[in-house]
Length: 223
Image 1 (cartoon, helix red, strand yellow):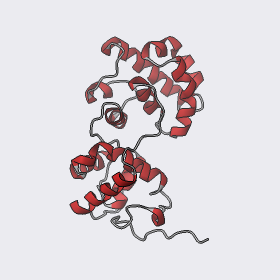
Image 2 (tube, rainbow, N blue to C red; image 1 turned 135 degrees about the vertical axis):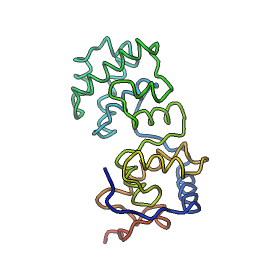
Image 3 (cartoon, rainbow, N blue to C red; image 1 turned 90 degrees about the vertical axis):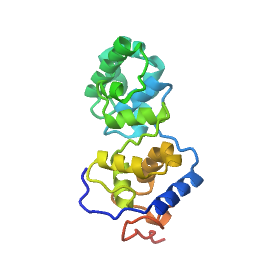
């Protein structure tokens, strides 16, 4: 995931302008994973590794109806979880983690999803990125989960050039204005997913193109 080209950072004023623009266009950005509560959000994020949100949502629609809490998930069993998520990549290992994290939530947290990063990252299948999503989306903490989309946007635009996801995350936490920090995670991921695409960024319809460091800008396709 390392970046091979150093990008000049944007100025403080430019960053302020970028997030003001995002906020103007989409004041309350939302993630695309579907969930019922903190537990199903956690499970959905664990399942989303190396999978699309749409694919996860399709698989969890029935799963969350029959197992909306850790107790029901454990009762379903690992084999039962596998049956529901077998359309998702790496489903066997993910089912193992979902079963194990459900057991641990019951044993150590009274069946509730913990609000602390250390407790979240101690759960099977939960790393820093997953913990950040849950902390931001459910607990409304100003965290930033750096996936491949956000890593690309941070480097390509000059918002937060960094060699690793952690470096990009830390730079964004430091540089994004506090008033925008809670929503920055969703704005940047959605921007990377639908506009600032990996192979061919759609610069001609980018709402922050005037500040972006990426060159040459991709021209609009010919009619």
